[in-house]
Structures are given as structure tokens and as C-alpha cells.
Amino acid sequence: MNTPLHDIYARKRILITGGLGFIGSRLAHKLVELGAEVCLLDSLAEGSGANRFNLNGIESQVRVVIRDVRDEAAVTPLLAGQDFLFNLAGQTSHLGSLQDPVYDLEVNALSQVKLLEHCREHNPAIRIVFAGTRQVYGRAASLPVNEQAPPAPIDYNGVSKLAGELYHLVCSRIYGLRTTVLRLTNIYGPHMRVKDARQNFIGWWFRQLIEGQPLEVYGTGEQVRDLIYVDDTVEALLLAAAEPDSKGMVYNLGGQPLPLRELAQLMTQIHGFGTWGLVPFPGERLRIDIGSYAGDYGLLHSLTGWEPKVSLQDGIARTLDFYRRNREHYW
Ligand SMILES: NC(=O)c1ccc[n+]([C@@H]2O[C@H](COP(=O)([O-])OP(=O)(O)OC[C@H]3O[C@@H](n4cnc5c(N)ncnc54)[C@H](O)[C@@H]3O)[C@@H](O)[C@H]2O)c1
Image 1 (cartoon, helix red, strand yellow):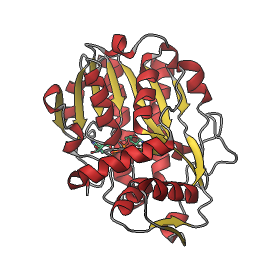
Image 2 (tube, protein in one colour):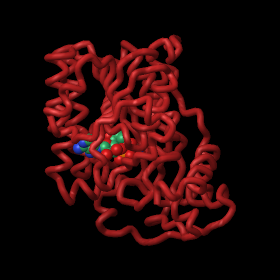
Image 3 (cartoon, protein in one colour):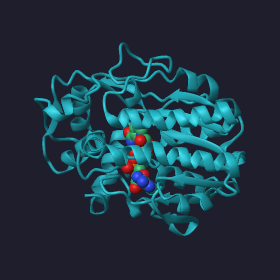
């Protein structure tokens, strides 16, 4: 993909569901910078990363619609005339999916079918990228995991997200809709939710560090994760949407793999002080823990040239700096 992103997105009409959340809002900032006409749909879902401050600086340059993606009457008019849909609204908590499986299913799967059905009837030329998750793989047999690995989710959220992505892919196969799925892994960076560990332990670790609290690493700390900085994720979304050959395809993202105990060590080092320690896995988390994960992003790389650019060291430093300055908006 050699065409500059500006040439692809300038003056294009874009809808981002989940646009006030962590990734959606970063994507919105980038698209505004690229000269796109951006509309954001978001329900400000409780327990999510939704935050109005995420739009700081672009409030007057985007259209914001506060409605639920499950609300068909609200969503369908927004799809008319859009060139691109970045479909990021989701119930993202794994524990949350066990506490309210029906809500999880409605947001991550049912509303997706309705949205796709509407697009194929009324806006079949739209380009759609769906934010999938590595959670669909469950416990990986070997690392790194490529797209050929069989899906085997181990919690309800993995099931509903898998259903959501399959609807996108099948809709492409049957009706020719231009959909693409990116399976994201642990995304981190400024503007992520740090209120608690409900969604993501990394955000919580940033907050704990800044508050002078020890980082709790579950189990042996040997479990591997491959974190990706949010700017790299935004670039992957934009490249995947722009590439015609990504139609009907699913791609992994992947970052720099390392065990969580090393991540905790690195974060305390970069912060300059702080401690971390191993604690027993809480039972409710252990039963849905995926063990180690690292994604093989070779397929996306061969198509678009995408690879993570922001090193873990740099990304952690940037994130700490952001929360030291902006805690009043995120605590
Ligand atoms: N952050 C990660 O590490 C990660 C990993 C894998 C997949 N993903 C996927 O990426 C997408 C974005 O994640 P994020 O990290 O930005 O999460 P986030 O919680 O920060 O953003 C999600 C946004 O969706 C909105 N939303 C939730 N339910 C909604 C509904 N019913 N109607 C309208 N809006 C609704 C929320 O209000 C929130 O603003 C999600 O679909 C998630 O499953 C993220």
C-alpha cells in the first residue's frame, strides 16, 4: 500500500462506532488530521473506556451521536453515505461478559448483524473494519499465533466477538460487502481506561505506578503478552481499510512479546520508582485466563507493510507522562 493515507481519507465520510473510547477516539484524531469528515457513535457505556476528554482538541471538528449501537433506529441513518465504517463499539470486559452474557451478545453480535444487514441493503459500497480480538483463540497451542489457528474462546466475550467477526466475514463472502477483521491484542497508551482492572490490567498498572502502589502480577508472571501502542493500532486500522485486497479477510496484530513479570519490571524502571510482586491468581480470573499469547502479524505485514513502530520503552514512557499530566480526567 503505497498511497499516502491523506490521499485515501481526505474528504471521505467516516463513521466510528465506539468513537469516544480509547482506540476509537485516537482513530478520530488521526482521521481529522487526514482531512476526513468524521462522525462518532457512542453510548458512553458504563465500565468502558468512553471519555469525553478523549476528544479534547477536535470537539468542534467531529459529529458526536450519543446512542447505543443496539438502537437500530439511531444507527441506520448514520450509515447513509458513509465511505468507511470503523466498527469499534464493543462490550470489552471478559468478566463482564460472564456477569451479563445477554448484553455482551447483543452488543458484540446481534447489533453487528443488524448493522451489516442495513449496509448491504442501503450502502453496499461502504468499507468496514471490525475490531476483533485475540481472545477468540483461547489458550494458544504455540506462539506466535497466526490466523490459521482454530478459534477456541474460553469466555463468553470471546464467543460474542467471534460471532461478530464471523458475521462480517460471511457477509463479505455471500454479499460481497467490503469487510475486514483485525484481531487486536493488548493495546495500550494515553487515553485508555485506568479506573480499574475490569477491562485491562495494563491501564490499572499505569495508575498503580503513579499512585505509588505495588503492581500485582498474577501467578508466576511468566505468561507472555505482546502489547501494541495505540498509534500503531490506528495505523493498522487505516491501512487495512484502505487496502482493497483485505476484503473478507481476518488479520492478527502483534507486538513485542514479553512475560508479565518483565513488563512490570520495565514499567517500574521507566517510571523511576515503584515495586511489583507476584500474587495468586484470583479464581474468577484464572478460569478465563488464556495463558501466554503473541500474535503473528506476518499476513497483515505482507499486505500493507504494517509493523509496530513505537517501542515498548517509548510507549510506556509516553503513557506515564500523559497520565501524570491528565489524571483528573481519567481517575
Ligand atoms: N484495547 C484492547 O486491548 C483491545 C483488544 C482486543 C479488542 N479490542 C476491541 O477494540 C474495540 C475498542 O476497544 P477499546 O479498547 O477502545 O475500548 P473502549 O471501552 O475504550 O471503547 C469502546 C467504546 O465503545 C462504546 N460502546 C460500548 N458499548 C456500546 C454500545 N452498546 N453502543 C455504543 N457504543 C458502545 C463505549 O462507550 C466505548 O466508548 C472493542 O470492540 C474491543 O473489543 C480492544
